[in-house]
Image (cartoon, rainbow, N blue to C red):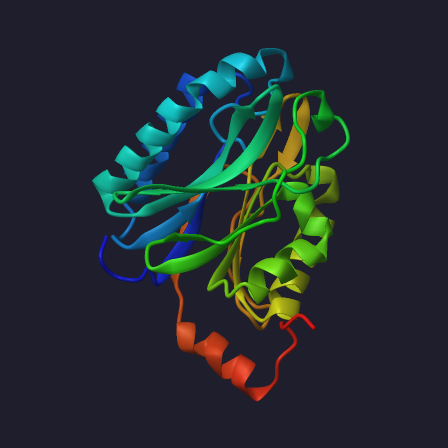
Length: 254
């Protein structure tokens, strides 16, 4: 991939807990159906390949190097960037890590900063502050699910010079109104394009709410999913963000 991605979107799909082969097959089918345009960046749900299968996290983390390679190979096949999170082990701790995968390889990680109650059965928060990841000619700020409720995470990524914010999640249907409200707020307050991908249907006993979105720096929803398995992508006009920030700024820190 030689040019800057100007098309972004999401692949909203089910996350079958503990069923890596099933989830990888689902991704392959979704890509075949979506037939994405080259130089597109597509976001996947949180822990899209494994889910929160706490009882088998050792086995899942052992598969992550292979999964990252497979994801990069899939991205290369379509000439796109695939973004999502994977379980990784460091010492005796597990991290929920955000990566970008493309024909150039694997870029990352940036770790989940805030662990939702119950996730501490396996995961710990990132040992380092969130960092930008570069792929497709973009500086990307990736954050993960519960991090959405902590605006300092997204502000830090914007202050580092992010071109785009990506939120990978497994957000429950019962709080989907919060999901949409908070995503719009993060885009508006940081004056930045934002893509968020949620899981759908049931995963690990929780009904996920779908409603993946692409949001403009003005808070306008450019694309939105429903509650089922689907995908969408839109072409971004980067000058819109620069124009808005040139007129007034609310995204700088300090």
